[in-house]
Image (cartoon, rainbow, N blue to C red; front, top):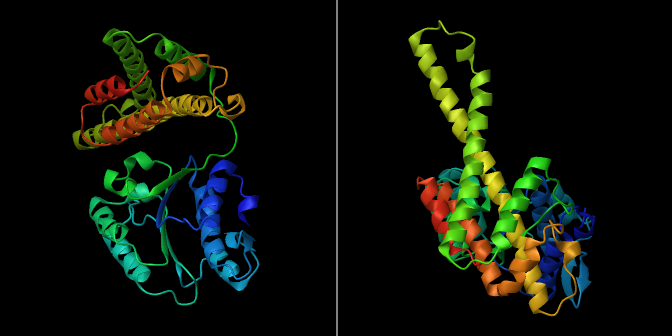
Length: 347
């Protein structure tokens, strides 16, 4: 399967191929998207293209693979000596420091038969801190003729020091997001409030109230659902030690599910801010209507905000939302992180 066959966002594929065409390939990339399998396909095809013996060329540079030569075949079947993959292991599903050290040792060696050494980290957001720091050393001084590719569905969990040293490409599925009636109603209300004139801090705190209220309702619904499923509700006369075990498991399950749904909600807002960025950028560059590119073209607030801010400010909003997600994966107080993040947004 070549680049042209992939069912992912073609705009990002084109950006990648343009870099290949211009001889400006980065030494490290973060490929992000909602699902890990399409990201693996993109990474695999980049490795093929770099090492294909009969590549598709544009202006003399390889921009796609033939998908038929021995090199492409071996990479497809994960048995090429110069293309290395690591994935989360063990019961905790993490990438260990030993895995990273072994991978970096392989990358430092000269290619056995290919033009490029390629290392792919699947679910890179599962790097333990020690493993991430070990990987960072190679990022700072990458070997010649090597490309490092990090794949993640939650790039906000990566260390800032790693993100800053990589080029990032986002690969969607190419289809518009489908919202439930409740999600649509909430997002419409939030964006309508965000698009109103922000003449004082009062507007920001109103936005915070809307977001916090939604998160409070979300946690309450999760607690109700998971508590009803807990064995504590069925075996009220169980021994004390067993009840305590169930209570701990329930608390952990509630927290895990809440964090997942919180990430999903903030991701929804981030996708709207991406629409604002797109509209602001195309408008500033004299582009035509961007409605066909927007995920939420039905929301009028997008255009109102895009007209008020610059492309640089729209970009800053996306960075703020990513930073907010990273904060919330630490032990920082949720309300404080939300307050600081919303106050930094340019609306």
